Image (cartoon, rainbow, N blue to C red):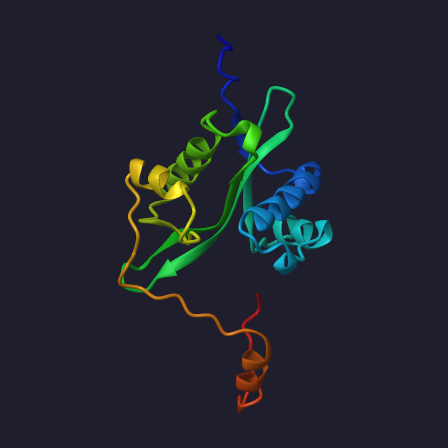
Length: 173
């Protein structure tokens, strides 16, 4: 019987991880049957993760050779009802060969620990409705938010609405 692979290590993403993470984002887009919608570049991810005031945060699961085998990309959200931040998980992905090693669970556990440590009250994400990971998410205590319906404004509709703005003022970000 083949022994199980060693448990991965979870750590914050580093600049040298960017090529592997971008490749995995494209693998995720393929898995979700939407490769033509994925346009992320290494330059874009580097700018988002490693700017002086980053808009995005990342953790990677690495193997014994310190090579990324999975990742979580996330950012802060804010609940006006609760008055505290939370974490929104944009993407979670583990390469097929590394599934079953605990990498996904440990990536989520790391984000849960960040929430608890910082006093955040929730960790949220969207999942494509046919993803078999739903069973895993349920097993860790997550539940779907059936009462909420996601909306998106993009492309032509976004530009048409923006053209109706009487003033544009952006806070320094």
